[in-house]
Picture 1 (cartoon, rainbow, N blue to C red):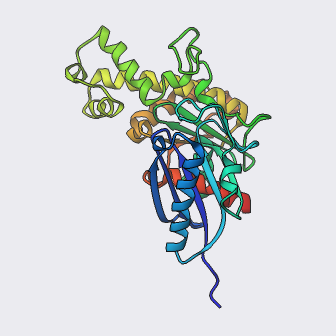
Picture 2: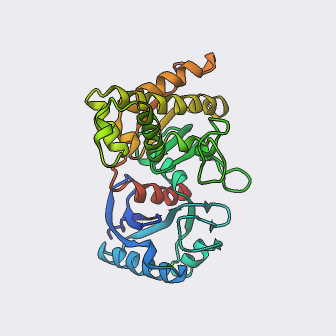
Picture 3: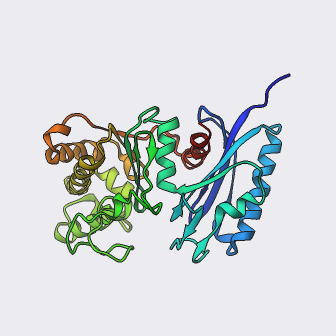
Length: 317
């Protein structure tokens, strides 16, 4: 008798889209689908829509053995299985997401925030495969992070540990969406680097960026690749903030590896080389030349699903 293929369900909930799929132990996404998160202002309707499509994917894969479901979402609490006051979702207050999904499935369901899911996905499938101590930094619209220490995600006492993006790197600096000032994500993120570009351009227009109708992190990277000095200075300023912060982070958790993911990380050595330089400049001697900074190896189109599904594989190991 042929044994059934073992697969995990991965669900990634974003403010715009929710993507989900079936993933094997090697990180191959066997099937996937997506819905518009905003089309479901009532969370129960959202759960119904997702579970119906997930069950259809399972059926189309000849009813494999599902070992569990992992969900990545903003403001998700691993301990309580809830999404707590997520600002970019239509569901307000505390949402008992795991309990709602558990009504539809007889396999385990686990939940964590999207950056933690990305960290575990990188450890199980990607650039940090088998690494027990790492920091994952997602440089997207904001800055997310996940800390793995001794092979386990760090959650803290309340489930919300590991907020590198909301460590303050500039006293009374830029206003952050969290309500404070000077948070790292206001400098080292796609949004942050655009703010830096506008500040720099207010002082000097000697750049190809000055003629653009809209400045994006990609247009800054493109200009830097062409040798635009102002664009290179913008990357250097961003890397200085990030490298300084990572040096402090290393003093606390001593990771073997730092993995960068997201749109800004796709600029490769433009961000990685200067970040590494500033990190090393600010490191304690006992940590110098020990820690690598590498780009993610997860396929961008599947990364969110892989990260979420890794929670299920982690739970069953």
